[in-house]
Amino acid sequence: MTTVSVVEEKGSFRLVACDGRFAVVEARAGQVFGMPDDVGGGREGATDTPDGIASVAHWTGEEEARALMRDLSGQGDQLARRIW
Picture 1 (cartoon, rainbow, N blue to C red):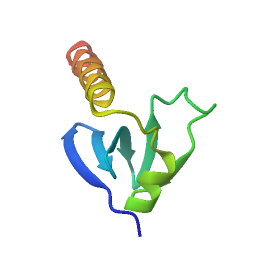
Picture 2 (picture 1 turned 90 degrees about the horizontal axis):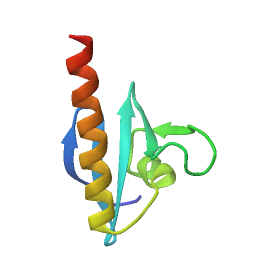
Picture 3 (picture 1 turned 90 degrees about the vertical axis):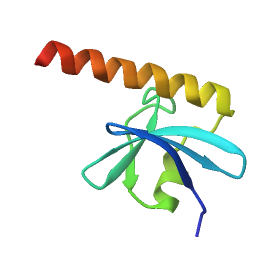
C-alpha cells in the first residue's frame, strides 16, 4: 500500500505528497484524476485511494505543485463567482 498524504484540499482539488514528491489531483464521485489533465493524453481516473492517487499523480517538486494548486483553486473560485 502506498503512503500518500493530503497536504491541502480546496474544493475538489488536493495537494498530495508521497516520498518527498508532490502532485495535485482532482477528486470527484469516488474517482481521482491527475492534474493538469492534459499530461499523458487524457483524463484517466482511478479509485480514490492512496494507490489510486499514486497511479494518476503527475509528481513534481513542492513549489511547482503548490503553484498549480493556487492556479486551479483560483480558476474554480472565478467560475463559481460567474455562475452565481
